Structure formats: structure tokens, C-alpha cells
Length: 437
Image (cartoon, rainbow, N blue to C red; front, side):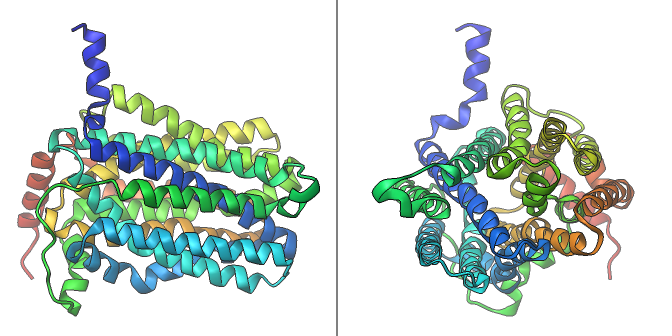
């Protein structure tokens, strides 16, 4: 076998697992539908209200269930069949998308209906997120886990590139005749329902390996175990909280309809391009990482890339050109991808199997805070300062947080190799070095 063939085989080692192939296929179609739906929801809400704060409320509606349910969802992920949890949650999301379709077809202009449905979708995500994260180590051999994480991120970005673009195209498709009633948001919601249905079928074909979950009784101690574990594992706490604050402050996703319509004058199609641009950059980097994985100085590379994320966010906020904005957002996605891969590897490889659901739940809560609540924060800040100032200030604060975290979380900065033995050992050494309370 030639060297190039060996490299190609190594780059795709996770796909030797049948379970991984079905799981990633399911994620691809499910995320395609969900990302297309975000375009329809954002444009529909903005057409109704024309207020930045109302775009922020869409993120808040998706985020609030995480506050209420994420920690309990982690306990559920460690106690019950993770595949069944995921399946039930996606069926719920499909039903909710059907409700969004009904709202769009009825012509109602009451956005409270949309927020209520988004809350239920967020509830499904709050339970499926920890279960999905904790399921991945059961799909591939340990040696293939980093490759699985990288390809998982790659598939996610492929869907993030294609999903918003498809959403923009479907939203503006000039339907006529008997199909005219589906023009706009309804057609996008039909596409999302199809994607979620395909997800449920494909995930049913996955047969996870490994020991069954332990049936611990529900108690405050077991529900809060993930938080307790992270508090004493500064390596994990640093990586998760860095993403929380950097993306929370620097995120500009919820404001893209404003930039697309009022600053760049690009319309719904331009909005789809803007939403897809970060994923183009992220996809490029994720494909590169499958061939040239991070082998050394993972912590330093992660911190550097989060700093680049903040600088590129500032550039996007100042841009008046569609192409410059797309380039800045591509850099945002590329730099964030390095952080995503390193953080995901840290989360699963430095956590014992029996704790993965609850630790993933805390990560999911923080991730929701940085994304969905970040959308609310961006909308609120834009209402006060204007969209451009809100994005620029957020980017500056994101860079500031990165600099502080490099000082406050030295174990994160010092991470070298991403292997389960190295990371678990670093976690234990760091915990042993903590003063006894």
C-alpha cells in the first residue's frame, strides 16, 4: 500500500465503523433541515416585527430549556439508552416544525406562537445534545476517537454550509400555481420535516457498543455531579468556559438579517450566504485536520484561534462589503473549528465513561448559553448600541476574555497531545495539586 493510500485510510479511520457511518449520515440530514429552518424563522420574525430584539428572543426561546432541563438531561443520558433519547427528541422537533408550518400557512403575525414552538424545540435539543455527545465514544474504537470528532465537526460544517444556503434558496423559490401557498417559510419547514424524519430512520440503525448505562436513582447529587466534576477539573472548566464567554460576547449570528438587509443590502439570498460563510471556513479547516491532526501544543493553538475569532468578528462588524463580510465570517468559522475539535476531544477523552452524559450536559448548557443566549445578548445590545457597534464591541470583549483565560487557566494553555491517557493523567495531576478545602 502506498504512503498516500495509508494517509487516506488513516484520515477516514472512523468510517470503518458501521455505527459511525449511520450516525453521521443521520446528523447530516438532520442538521441540514435544522439550519435551513433557522433562515425561515429569522426572516419570518424580522418581517413581522422589524426589531433586532425580537430576533434575539428567538435565541432566548431556544436557550431557556437548557437552563431548566440540561443538568437533568445529563443524568437521563447516563441512565437510559442514549439512542432512544435522541430518537424521541427528534420526533418532538419534527412535530414542532409541523407546528411552525401551520403558523406560517395560517398567516398569523403573533410571534409569541413562534417563540412557544421554539421553546419546545429547545427542550428536545436540551435532552438530545448530552445524549448525542456521550454516544460518540460508543461508536468507534478509542484510537479512532479524535478522527471521529474531526469528521463529526466536518459533517456538521457541511450541513451548516448547505443548510442556510438551501434555506435561502427555498425561501425565495418562485412557486406558482397549486404550490404557491408553500412559497417562503412553509417550503423550508417542509424540507426540515423531511430531514428530521430521515434522521429518526437512520439513527434507528445505530447499534452502540459498550456497557449499558448505570441505573442510578435521581437525586440532587447525581444531577449536579457533572457541575461538581467540572469545578475540580480546571482543564475542562477552562475550555468550556472559554467557549461560553468568547462566543457569547463575540457572536453575531442573530444580527445577520439586519446586516443582510440594511447594511449589505443582500436580501434573503445574501442572508443564506452570510450564515453559510463561517461554515465554509470551518469546513476547510476540519478537512485539513483529518489529514493533519493536532499532535502538539493543542491548548496554545486553541487559545490563539479563539483570539483570531474575536479579531475576525470585529472585521465583520466594520465591513460594508458583502465579500469582505463573507471573508471575515469564513475566518470566524475556521478559527472556531480548531477550538471545537480541541474542546470536544478534551470533553470526552478527559471524562470517565460513566460521567460523560452529565459532563456533556454542562457543556451543552454552556454551549447553549454561548449560542442561543448569545443571540439574545446580541439582539439586546444591538437594540441599545446599533448592530455595528454591538458586533465590534463583542469582538473586542472576546479577544479580552481569551487573553485572561490564557493566564487564569494554565492547565488548558499547557495541553500538548490529545489522547485519553494524557488528558486523564493531566486531569488527575491537576486535581491532586489543588489545595484541600
